[in-house]
Image: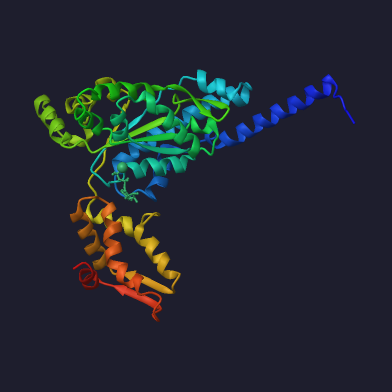
Length: 367
Ligand SMILES: Nc1ncnc2c1ncn2[C@@H]1O[C@H](COP(=O)(O)OP(=O)(O)O)[C@@H](O)[C@H]1O
Ligand SMILES: [Mg+2]
């Protein structure tokens, strides 16, 4: 049997399909369009995960809340109220981006903050190691990769991918790393990055499909240790007769002195200096953070009917040892593992109930 559809029916079906597609797209981006957290609300949520970094979190929460409120408002007007195509709107909307630069020692929560923030806002997150870029020497070649990472994080939804957060790790290394390659200048890498951070259009090929992606609305958060930046800032402050904490005075100028491109640093108007984690911070990470490595071990042991309890002294001792490692909160995981390993290994045994560890116990395990 052969059924020929009338022109009219076909048109109606096509319209229905288009409407369904539009609905799907809207549903996926709805929570971003409706983003409505105030900076202080966002920071309060971040506090449950990221310990310490009070001032830094305040600045970051404000920048992120403003970015997504601004993007959401623009989309709401154009897509919901005027019925415009979301791809077109993303292409034509102009929202000033406040990319963020986080300076701070290793393991103090730079990457973690970016990850938690994207989770709280509900946008895809990708981490890119910049030392990888400098080896290639030309960032343009790799921007496609970054967009693919976002696309994967967005479960293949290109609209959502274009509103994600990208963390650029070790941005301070793109200069020094490239000095090792005589023919590749670090400045070239930085120029390439400039375009990416500002907003760059790309076509990602996936089989037969060509997906248009732009970094125009992607929020970039860059992080780096910037060894000795403190002395650069302090020197300038002394010269200018400025008083106060150097961390509140970091400027693009200091980063240029460090060796960064002025233009690139200008694309990161929000600058934050994170603190070295104190022993108390490390203790709080174990006892208070939602992602506490200690809580994970406690849960693991509960599955064997063992209630792991660490005394306050034990926690202090573990934090003290972790601090000595100089890798920030990363040290906690390795120290905890060393403390608990023997007990974990000898499971199940016949022991159940409370397992209390005090300072002496911790010390004996770490000998
Ligand atoms: N301030 C913090 N609060 C809670 N956890 C933290 C903090 N800093 C680091 N961590 C923990 O240590 C891990 C490594 O931190 P990360 O953010 O990657 O360090 P970096 O500053 O070098 O980017 C994180 O995944 C997190 O579990
Ligand atoms: Mg990191």
